[in-house]
Image (cartoon, rainbow, N blue to C red):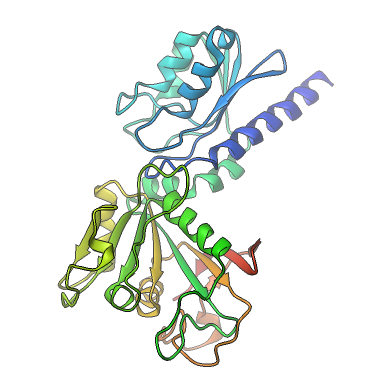
Amino acid sequence: MSLLLKGISDRQWMRRAIRLSERGFPAPNPPVGCVLVRDGQWIADGYPTYAGGPHAEAVALAAAGESARGATAYVTLEPCNHTGRTPPCSQALIDAGVSRVVIAVRDPNPGAAGGVEQLRRAGIAVELGLESEIAERSMAPFLYAMRNRRPYVVVKAAFSMDGRIALPSGESQWITSPVARRAGHALRARLGAVLVGWRTVAADNPRLTARLAGVVNQPIRVVLDPRNQLTGQEQVFNADAPTRHIIGSIDLPEVLSQLYYDGVTGLLVEGGGHTISRFFSAGLVNRVEAFLAPKILGDGPAWVSGLGIPSLADAVQLGDFEIRRRGSDLQIGADVLCGS
């Protein structure tokens, strides 16, 4: 009976750590949560708020102080075992005197892995895999990038009930509500990079920044402009955030590969419809986040078109919808399973 209760308690603490991990904007680093518990009582917790800042374990240990000695640490990702912009978290846990570490997911980044072995060598009990499925989803962009050597791609589109992203005149601001637009800014910050085609820049002159409280590192802005038709004076080229202006022949897999080696782990493709369609046609989309507004425009460009799908059997297949209310709009998210 005691083991059953212990297991339930462990799951609850790990789920708390997973929820914590979703609060910060540490891209391109993983969103990690850490909870410290001793004798069944919460001591402290932490999560990284931005890339380059203290990791989750360091934040929790600093808050706990001497109370961390003899505690159990619940961490969503294997504590790092290398010195980068911050010291190794595995050593910080050892120095703090924790007695047990429960980890949801091992770190697939070879440069940071090894924390499990380091902790065990120090005599700390380590348990792996608790709530790994939920934790994997919370860190999907980082984990996918590390395992596949390219960023995790999310297509984001805001459109009317009839699938239009603008009127025939090009007017598109604003189809969705301010609440939905803030959710879009959060996606930019969480993924760490945002991509558009030159037509979107020419039509809307967007800034493509994440204008939210708590965002320290602005997302990298990527603009595809094969014929160099932009002037360079558009807002996307200002000093608010770094920008990659890609001109000439564009090979999307090569673009993703280069972004990965530049440190990008997640990429939000915002449009327009032609650019989104190219990513679908190349089979490079991992997830869709659609913002549906209660409007009917009747005419205008669609958010995706021209895929040339010959039959329903060849359609892009999505997983189960995750639906959230965003003001007057709906945010509908789904993983891409196969197709196109």
